[in-house]
Image (cartoon, rainbow, N blue to C red; front, side, top):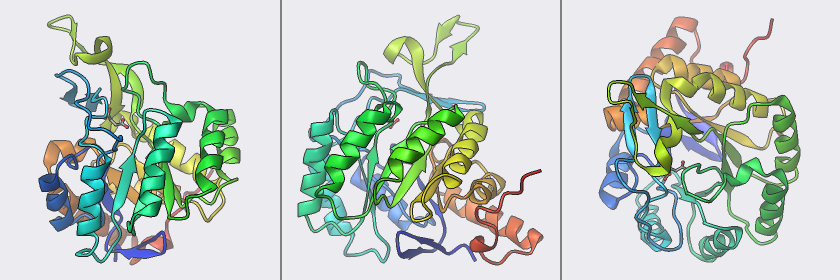
Length: 309
Ligand code: SIN
């Protein structure tokens, strides 16, 4: 009932983790691989291992989360070695996330992936809001165009990019014009809403240490923004570019809404952090219940079919 076609592969359901959550170590990724998730993605890698920002750098909130992790990761070789070995045991491809500190670092990592025997799907994260001094690359349309031109001159494996949220129709138009020039497999909308501020009123203090308390907001707070981004790109992108919907998925109903907007796969970050890997079982069950209530037996019957008034 929840089978999903994505990047020419059939996944048992559309659910997966959002990169960053439960995917830093081999142990965590193994748990995802064994879970009810339809797929999983590795933590965004840089060439060298990174410790990330000082702690506390993640806080769960009643309506979501705030984080400023700063791309802590074990370095690309750790994740690539794991993916190369694990892909032999999997019947669906692994998603592999990278987030270089510069365009050259992204190119270097993509060259390594291209030359390797990796058979999965690569996600280029152009939207991390948490590295001090590094703006979110995909807010610069010309720079995004330039890096995609460099990448597609040599990269032949499936590639998606993770985008930040946009808030203006002119920006959706401008970014869609850039993306439509390239043979992208997918976009992933959205990364966290960057540089929010959550305050502990009793202590009159911020709740995370890096960047004076500023951090990416996820969870229920961001669902309307995530849905808008999925819908805006679904109605602007070439149909060959699929969409992963990420942001505010806490229930089967949220998942249904993302699919209705046009998403094909769904990533779960904040709620996975809160609930652990059993969240995938619950979300799949709840999505099936809603579909049954509405008389749908396949996602394609309603995916993208949001009605306007
Ligand atoms: C982080 O490591 O700071 C989170 C990753 C991201 O927002 O892309």
